[in-house]
Length: 65
Image (cartoon, rainbow, N blue to C red; front, side, top):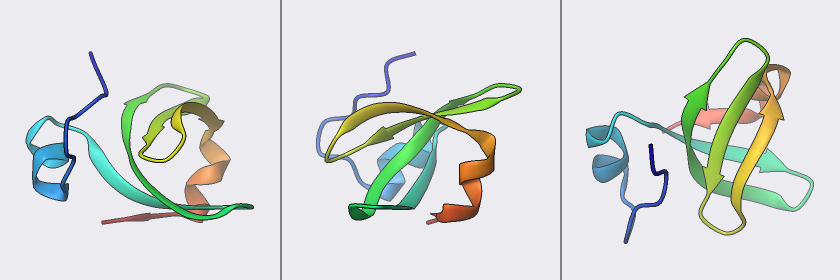
């Protein structure tokens, strides 16, 4: 599963089966999408900083678009 999308839009992200999110970090708000979810972690791709693994508890800082 390749999380990279050329010129990502909400529609393209949803059509590929991912969940678009706006993630509030210490650097500010960053847009991206959740491309994989397991028991303990969320695997997200942020447009500005690439792929990240975060604990599921971080979902409280995400807003689904």
